[in-house]
Image (cartoon, rainbow, N blue to C red):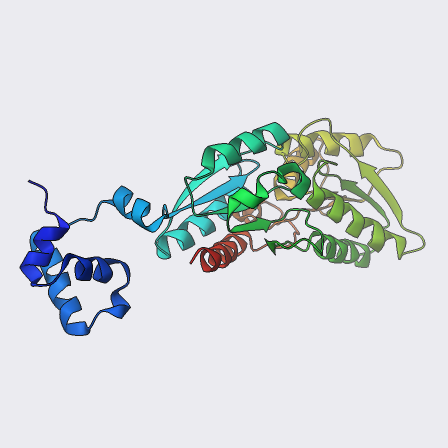
Length: 310
């Protein structure tokens, strides 16, 4: 027969309400009573019913996480930071994906609504208008790498895509390169647009620079897209001396295409990425990249959300 809260109260010699307070708000109970209750809980092997507790407290103990994809090292690191920090704070995580699709985004929000205490959303190809109807019902929410206006009253954690890519481009130019190609990310993604803007600004500051912008017919952050764009760069006349990929994943595809074509890196062509994923640290030659502390960003977003939930 299952042990009940009444059994714990009887064993500890206290009221049921005192047991409840010890389990939910222990700081309001005197230490002597708290010790007796906890000892009784341990002796009897009592386990509170999580569903009943969530109904009483009107909480679920869950955090909803909405990301475009879960595949790839970038999202793996991001979700690792989220999951680890959420568990340490006593929350579980429910994850859903939007695949950069507005209708899937709304369906995902509907499926998680009322099942979690707060939301962490990454929507680089969307904006708040896409979920305007949901905002009043979402409860606490933190937006990561999502286009949010300065006047929008929402919590947010943003990457400095513009500044990071601007500095990376300046570094490439400082090496003497002038004919530089950017292998653009998906035009609908705000982070890709910000990186492109950083590239353009840095190139515009050097009078004799020759910027080349290449786009892919494939998903712009994939190895396949990087491979395709590198092949296009090799056929470009005149050929660029440096290729700047949208991210490290695409840069791996660039390196594969150049190796296949017999082009030596960096002797004949320089290559850069963006993100500093662990896989990029083991390329030969080493990949020049800009670090995005994605695991730490996921952790920081969770801490911000938990503070709002509590």
